Length: 271
Image (cartoon, rainbow, N blue to C red; front, side, top):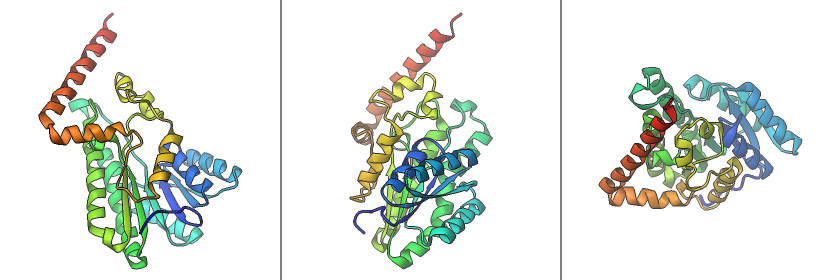
């Protein structure tokens, strides 16, 4: 399979009520896809559908939990009932919960369920059909944190690594059967998550905080050549290479950044 043309295709985007997911859904619809907008936030999903249909696109809103097997099954059933076979699944829903070693068991469990197991649940149901059809596309919104790390956020970092690892496994296992798998790994993006990042906001924005439309455009462009890693921030490739080639040096640099964050936090907390 070479390249993906959204025109006339059925695509599902999870976490599409806001942020990157909403931008992905509207971009795919603008290029002719029948777009299924999924989100736990029913009002957010409705807003995205309204924006798509107002622009002349075709969309179906399906509120629900895409992190559970039952929720995924319901979403797939609704998409197939309305538009037929699913051509591409954009596994975009994600969470960032807990800070440092104080992250609770609930933070870790939610992070695993949304950031990793949601992809497993979807692939279980989608991949057999795609193998039979000889084509299909699974696009995971991971993060640069899934290739590097995110200081202060262990649950997010570990589960985004897991998301990339699962996507790698899917690609290695099924690419010869026509299943294309891609992992989107942006750095700072102008979303609510960045706004809530506290002292990390400046660090994440170091190489420019992109808009959600920038990210969606990068994904659309990357779908044309099936590359596995989609890097809206090209600099991430250099960081990833440095991490692999000189791991201890890279960790030392990350630790210096951590110490800088701690200094900034102490100064901000002074009376």
